[in-house]
Length: 263
Image (cartoon, rainbow, N blue to C red; front, side, top):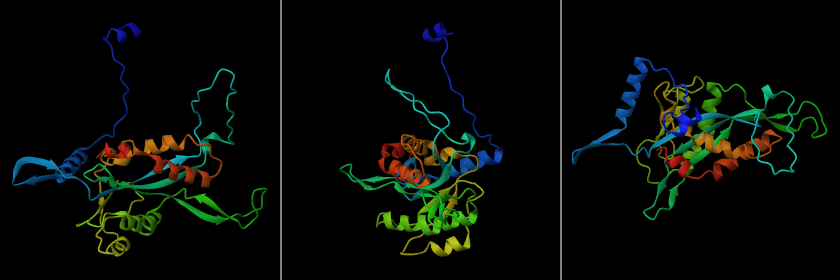
């Protein structure tokens, strides 16, 4: 086998399962892609829209640790000991990430950061019992394990929209679309509470859905989440607050090339 590979008669290939698309899924993908094509009277060649007015949002689970990790040790170094009470129930927190296409000046300087924000689905709850680390009643961070439409709506209105308004370039002009996938916790594009919260400070920020079974049409699923996670997994974490802080730091340190290449 190795000889055939070395001589070029065989080549290794990693095959991943892809979403099974129905005829309706394929039609929706085609219509979505065609909607991103712009035509000009001055040129017969159609061009894809620059997508500067699109904000991509998506959710991702981040874990306190992995069941198995690879380490590089010097010959006399002891192997690290990692323990967890039950490895099937490692602490995890879901985050909502919001990114857009970055913009640069004619000199190559970044004038608009693509990293609008990342928001953990967590709450502060008073501790029910006293322990060696805290007394009863101390507020501690707890992950929201079941994210519903109500939670998603609250995070969009109270966290995402304010950050878009604060960080978006002043000369925005026109609507800014928030593109989301078809997950059940996502709210409808005609959600009344969301529509009431969007028209502020001269902004028009409607929601839109990407085609079903089309994760590759969201830049966060193309590798940006993996880039953040690879940085976060380098940290030794012990609490949920440390996990949240590590994800924030990883997003900040992630280079813009990891996102620009996918637009």
